Length: 120
Image (cartoon, rainbow, N blue to C red):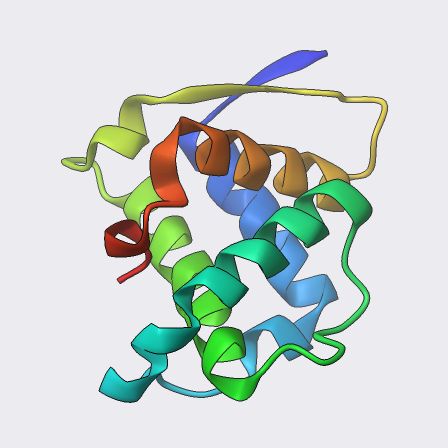
């Protein structure tokens, strides 16, 4: 196990997005996407637990929310004034960097980022 800081966490999320470019392709969120927030949260839970291999039958609005969440999360990690920038996470360093990124996502979901208002 190792502790990662916000800069390292951002690098892990970037590696996740780079290794899985489909996570970054759904496009820009629209106002009408809000109805898919629960589906997006469920998808994030599923990838955090089971890994990443595609959106499957996830709706396009939920895909956009997931992509937006991941990009927003990475951006907040890199902003010196954001509270996430001062946070650390415990990850299993025997796992791949992708799995470590997913552990951080799961930790954030557990800490309340699964609330619908936090996805926007």
